Image (cartoon, rainbow, N blue to C red):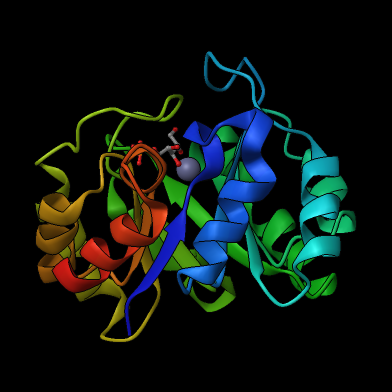
Length: 214
Ligand code: DX5
Ligand code: ZN
């Protein structure tokens, strides 16, 4: 089963509610919410209130939080806001990974680990029993609208080998119908797409095109 998780980063902030609604009507049941602190990445985005507002409006739709922050204790705030899945970067604090995975499980929040393009995929191995998902970045994090890094395909194959057939492996960055198809063939089964979904003529049409491509 392939899952599409639209990243709202490049949606129109003044029309966010309508854009999310259109995606839900097109069959989306998970959204990818990018949190940026201006330190781990040179960009700023949302805070926990967006997550609590989202869950109040869409309790049955998964809120997946991609934390691009140095200060991992922010995890507590997003868990309290009602996040269903929180994924944080290995590079933010390699020595704290175990602690925060245990914390998330204690809060009954699904846990994911994110790897930047230059981080060896083998680092996930020792955390696998505690992980619900792995996110392999297919761009350098920080901004929407960048191009998919082709060397990600080899990394995806390697990661798929490591985790076995059904484990959720997500890709994020530069995903469109073409790169999505290649990533899918290389082993990804969860696809974040921002500008592809929200930058076209119709959200419903973009969702359909991507579903067909995968
Ligand atoms: C980038 C973010 C992505 C981004 C994806 O740092 O993590 O989720 O919004 O946007 P596109 O699909 O436009 O590359
Ligand atoms: Zn993201």
